[in-house]
Image: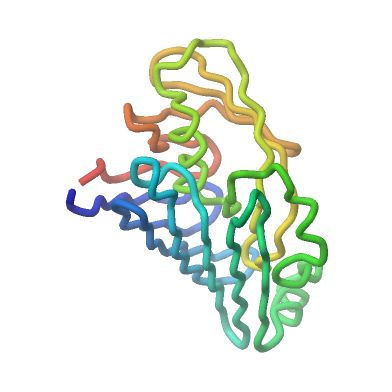
Length: 210
C-alpha cells in the first residue's frame, strides 16, 4: 500500500487556497476562499477501487460553511446515476445579499436524472477535481488535438447546488491541455500523473506531489 500524497494550490482568482491528501481509494481536501463571501469547503471523495488512486469519484461529500451558515451535499454513483442529497443550516442568502451578490440555489438538486451518463463529479473552482477526468481519460501523453467531451455533476461553491455541466479536454502536446466549459476556456499545465500544476486565472500549484 502506497503512502498518501499531498498537493497544495494557491488561488489566483480570489484570495484562497486548496489542500488535498489522497491515496488508494480516497481523497480529503479543504478549499478556502474569500469571495463571494468568506467560506471554507471541506470534501471527502471515494474513488473507484478498480482504478488507480484519484482517477474517478464514486462518492463525494462536501461541507461548506461561513459566518452564520453551513451547507452539505452528498453524491453517490450507483448503476450509472448520481444520487444527490443536500442540507442547509443558517442563511447563506443573507450573507450573499449583504455582500452585494445574488441569492444562491439550494444545496443538492431537484432532478438527479439530469446527471444520467455523467460519470464524473466536479467541485467548481477546484484544481484537484479538474485533475480527476484528466487522469481517468489518460490525457497526459495522449494524441494532441483530439478533444474529449464529458458530462459532469458540477457542485457550485459555496452554494453546493449541483448542476449538469459539459466539459471538453483537448491535449495540446507535452504537459499542456485545453479545458473548456460553457463559460470559459483555459490552457492548463499538468504533471505526468495528470494533476493540474497551472490553471491560468484560477490556481497555481505550490507543492510537488509528495
